[in-house]
Each structure stands twice: as structure tokens, then as C-alpha cells.
Length: 113
Image 1 (tube, rainbow, N blue to C red):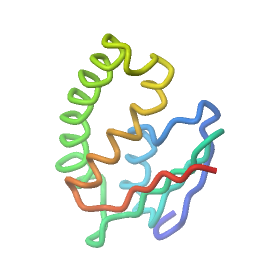
Image 2: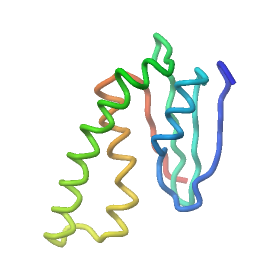
Image 3: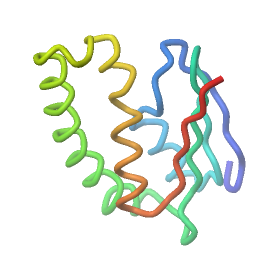
Image 4: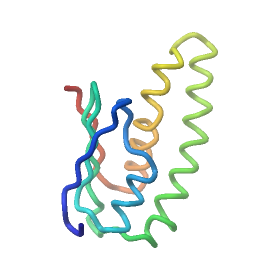
């Protein structure tokens, strides 16, 4: 699958799972896409490429850090009534991948249908 564009669906509408991005990194996929009920998501491999080692050394640590932050922020928003649990669930992975992409330097885009 090296250099391929890999597209799949998430019926629940969420963004990429960690397993999706791990797959993309290990197989050096050029772009991975996921489509759901309301949004299309795309993530383009970093310019320098990626690999399983890049996943382990760079992506996974960033992912874990941002998961903690996003979880705390969304729980706070639910507690304060600014967001429902369903809204938070839909935002969870999108917010994480937005932050990871910015930190690491790859392209992540969510587009509404």
C-alpha cells in the first residue's frame, strides 16, 4: 500500500482511530481518508515520510499527550453544559488529530459534506 490513497468509512462519523494512523505509517500510505455521516477526514503523510519507527517515536507520544488534554477539556465542557456527551464524542478524535498534525507537521483536514 506504499504511496496509496486509502479510503474507508466510520459509520459512527468519527475521525481516524489510532489504528488507522498506525496502518498508514507502517505501510507508508501517501494519504488516508475516512468518511462518515457528516464529515470527510483526510490526513496526508509528512513530507519526510513515515514508518513504524516514526509512529513509535513521534506520533504515539504526541497522540497520548493530546488525548489527556482533549479528554480533560471535553469532560469540562460537558460538566459545564457547553457541550453534550454526543457532541464531545464527535469532536474527540478530530480535536486530537488536529493538534497532533499541527505539532508534527502533517496535513489533517475535516470537511463537512
